[in-house]
Amino acid sequence: MRAWVIAPVLLGIAAAPAVAADQVATPDTSDQPAAESAPAAETPDPTAPPFGLKWGMPLNQLSALGVKVKATSKSGDLTIVTAEKVLDAYPDTKVISLLFDRHLGLVKVRWASTDIEDDPTGTQGRSKYSEMKKLVSESRGTPSDETLVVGARLFDQEDEFYQCLGYEGCGVWSALWDQKPSGGVLLSIEGMGTGKGFVQVDYESADWQQAAGQTARQAKAPDQVKSK
Image 1 (cartoon, one colour):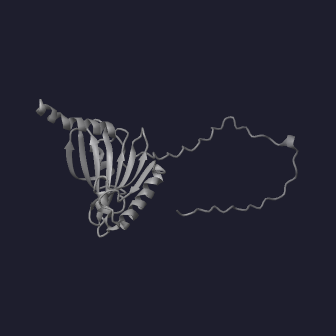
Image 2: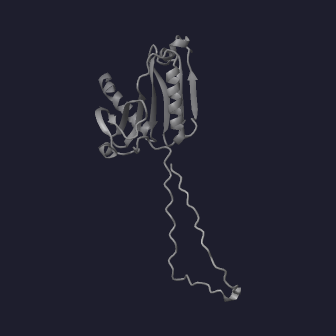
Image 3: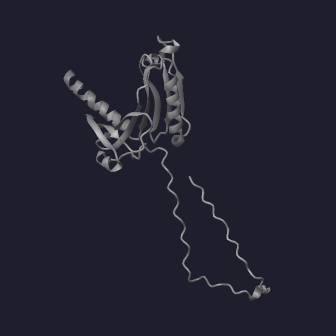
C-alpha cells in the first residue's frame, strides 16, 4: 500500500501585542451542528466461509457473487454444487464444492487442491499443507487440534506417505479449527496412492451437523421401509 505523507505548511505569522485573558472573546458555538463521527469500520467475521460467500445464503444467489456452476447433484435435502469458477479462488484449486440445505441454505464449502504427483515421501504435500494452514490461520487463529501421524499401520516406509494416509488407521495429517457453536474448519492431506494425493479444506457452518444428520436419516429411511 502506498504511504501518503502530509507535509506541514509553515505560515509566517507577524508578532501581535499581548492581550489580557479577560479581553479574549469566546466564540459562540451554540448554534453550530455537532460534528458527525465517522462510521466504525466493519470487522470481518472470522467464521465466514471463503470466496465472498455467506452461510445460509440460497443457491440462486451464486451468480450474483461471480460463481459459475459446473454441475449439481442431490442427496436428500442437500444440493451439492461443483463450482467451475469462484472469486478469489485459492492457488492450485482443482475443485470447489458448495453444499446447500433446502431449508438452511449454504452449510458447507469444500476446497480441494490440484493432484500432487511423483511425491512418494510427501514433501510437496506437506509444503502445500503448511501453506494452507497459514492461510486459514490468518482468519481463524491457531488450530484447536492438529494430528500429524503416519506409519501407524501397514504402510510404514518413508516413501509410502500417501498410501498410509489413504489407508484407514495408518495415518492422519490434519488440523482442526473447532469454533462451536459457529462451525469449524478441517484441513487435511488425502492419499490417493503411491506418491499421489491432494490437500483439502472443509469449511462447515453452525448448521452443518443438523443438515448432515437430516440427510443421513433420509438415506436410511428407504432401507428401513424395505426391512419391514
